[in-house]
Image (tube, rainbow over all chains, first blue to last red):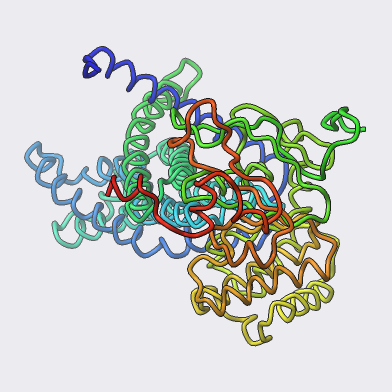
Length: 272
Length: 271
């Protein structure tokens, strides 16, 4: 038998990618169907909400705060070279609420919760616990996936607000205390520069990030291969895929939301 | 009458496969299997590891779907059932998984109560008494109720799995390698429990095993499958279908070899 040629290998890979995409689409549609069809029981929701929400607060807060501070360091030097050091608060905070808060909160969640969910479900699959659920009259998508998807979709925006807050506070502490910017100007420029739409666009994106983390991680987990290696791979793939999808979504949603903002019906310019 | 109900008149059994084949990608595992299990019978399916026994068992509750052919239960083609109907039909089965498949985030009580709660319309008091009854039935003390599966031995896990399967009062019990990984005494306890369940409840039982002690102890009928990779295309995958007592005297040397538990020349030459 001849070894497969390059075209053949490419063809096979494209076929696998398409099959994977189709499988993921069906999985997502079925999960959505279950979400709309039957409300999940509180005893399945609460543990997911606790794991995704409560237990992520420290790490998300810490990340948010340091990002605010790191950004303040860079922003102060850049803006003071241009002679607008006192205006750094505006630029820094708009970056936090539009981009860094949502993206970093989501990435932290993908790492902390997404890979753990994939590993947990992968283990349940290979030890036949998922099959046992089906045999006991419970659909795994309804019992396992819907609560996790809801937890991620609803709590990632809340965690984003917290990350934003910590980032803003971290940046403000460094800007006003360490670099000596007058707090009045710092906050004045922030209030002038950061609009409600900036905050909203960050939160809209985070809803999509949360849904992506929930769906990708559960899908990877439920399709885990046998053995410790298979579960480990599912967990890693869940994180990597979530990370890449978060960045891709961030780009396209960012573009879309900016276009909406600048649409003819949009509002007045920020600076008066 | 449901759309899924078969119109084939009197079927030869409560549950059955009709020309069922299963393949995973390019690898075929089951080929053209037709097998009917009458109500009340205890069928034991034996064969080497990798011959498709567990796959066959999972076909019966549609945890896997056949690549071709049909699976019928109580006159209904499982492929034609909607998700909700399938969930209801599955509650008529009790499945003891190879590793017990207990939910490790739950206590033993919640594991056994799971199927009852999924059914709904049963009070917590009723659930509590039924969980206790089934745990007692499989010889486990009430103290295990609050434990997590990780705190139990392999034999205890299997017995909890059995109690969980029994809790929903199934009509068909499916056992996947019930004695694998257990010491000889615990294996015999499990075999005795299979017999006890059959005596106490009107169940049809299908046991997948490679343990000949289980075959001798519990089987009304034995079916032996052979791995497709070592069969010629024209040979049937079911090598033996009959009472356990006639197995040893069967003409096919592969059946005799399995009963005797001896490695054949083909294995030794390939080693």
